[in-house]
Image 1 (cartoon, rainbow, N blue to C red):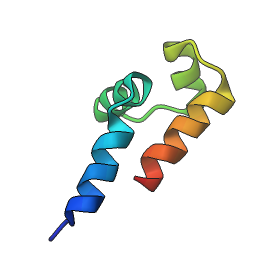
Image 2: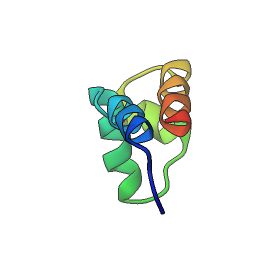
Image 3: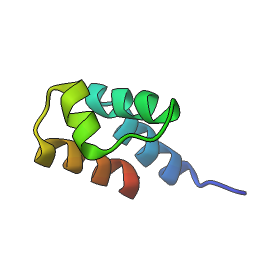
Image 4: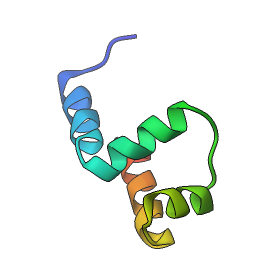
Length: 58
């Protein structure tokens, strides 16, 4: 699989924000719901959903 440099840069930018990086680490350990993530991160559901959308789009 060939990944373009632009795609790689976009992915790294998305992961560079601390909350999104924490989400990636948490999800690498197993499945979590948005509710689980809001509780663990201490953030609102809309904010966590936005982080997830940005990661998904990256």
